[in-house]
Length: 340
Length: 247
Image (cartoon, rainbow over all chains, first blue to last red; front, side):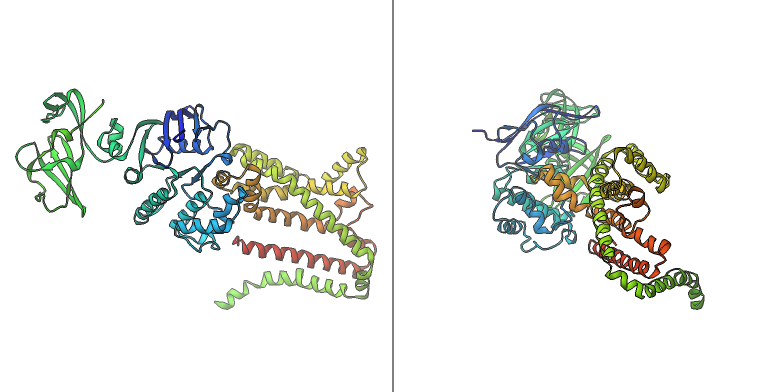
């Protein structure tokens, strides 16, 4: 009947006159990996706390699996939260932490379910350990096991990977994605890391100043950003402000290139879409080359501005040298016209 | 160098020998005198110990029951209110205990509530409240709020969160408060007699033996028992603290 697990309708929440969440409407599908992406202070954490029940919306409504959540306290919501700093109970063992939700629900078969949950997060046999002796990554897994063991309809994850080092984070990203697929559970993932959101999500909501800038699949958000903010926040880009006549686009700082845009517009070209080759295109000079293994970041100077080009290390591209005069070009359809 | 360092130890060592070791030795010798041993077989002794234990236990429990909500409330206030409320908690210390107890007696007498054990318990609870509130407060104040949220998120009602998370995590404060209240009450004298002469406690009897009855042996025996009890309790408490990793 109702395919949405989480539905927010016109949700607004203010703290001391400041709107943390401003008229947010979102539908999160059952079994979806959904990310709330935005810079700190964009309202993503508040939104998550509203879904969990720790904050109540000033106006608007929230339904979970079709049921209105107005006045329903956190402990009666079929939603579990993985806290940013894990919030494990220091007075309980690993097993005690994982069993907590089951004990509260007076569920049967506690021992076996705890064991299975710990196996799922690759911590088999950790039950008797003290949580204070675990590493950050292990604590993260315990928090995850504790949240999934009761089989909630929706799992909220508040920047769960932000305290871990890069390598561990990459590993856990894949693990989280696998876990979500296996459990078929709806995951709402809060993050400020756009790469993480792109890599893991089925859909992303880009938030800024408490408002939803865009909702869409990672490809859509990256390839067809709905707003300037979404374009700037997700991925890197070169932005050109100026006027087009339908064939040629002239930027305010005097560059020109082919584009179908007409009238005042902002055009975005992603760094990996730009090709450097002497000849046709925008004349420029190589300012810096940053070798990054799989690719090179090349910073070009064209007139008064800098351009960022991402050059894949596929052996095909010619080497460029710092100081060299060359030209940069791209297909007109790779110049994304942003709404102003 | 070493000799100099050791010479620094002379004053404290002398202090301990003169004011602790010698008196305790004298006390122990007196306790094992004929008078002292006779006091051990006196039913009155054990009757008084039983009453002291009962009063200390009930007073500590009541103190805890009253103090926990108070400490919880103070810990939940903003910094300015906290400072004010904590000041009010310790305000009674500005007045002498005997004066406070007299004042309390003048309040209780017209109500016809004196000369009984419950009045003694009431007087003890009200005068020992700060010793319970302060350690509880410092323990509750340190409790991370997100642990309470995590508990509720996992399906625990506020009441179950209190019993399964708040109480276990504030156990160090509870233990400290109980020790600070129970031990002094066990050996207390003067205050109970003001309120009720009919229900003497061990402390009053020791006072009686030494000051009025000139029965040093019996007084010493009772004192020694009290000391052993007190040291056992503090020993258990410090062992608990060690197991919790608090020391």
